[in-house]
Length: 122
Image (cartoon, rainbow, N blue to C red):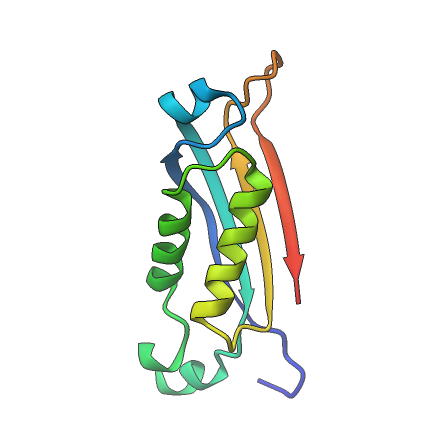
């Protein structure tokens, strides 16, 4: 890997059943959400050593997301902000965060594949 290479680790469309929403019914009944997290992280050492200790373990990222998704919130923006903060706090060597949180069936009277908030942080 040459100097200046960009490296990422991504969890794509991980599904959670969670209790977020402005309406009390949403927080009581819950619904399905998808989360995609892409973090900038220099994993060049792991590319050479083939050791999990030399990279960012994506199972740990999943656990961080899961903890934050388990806390009911009114707004997806709040959930996304908490996930980004928790990921960066637990792994300060991350260089960037791209995050998408999608509510699969938003109660807005329209048929769609979901409502998404998107966050990009360097």
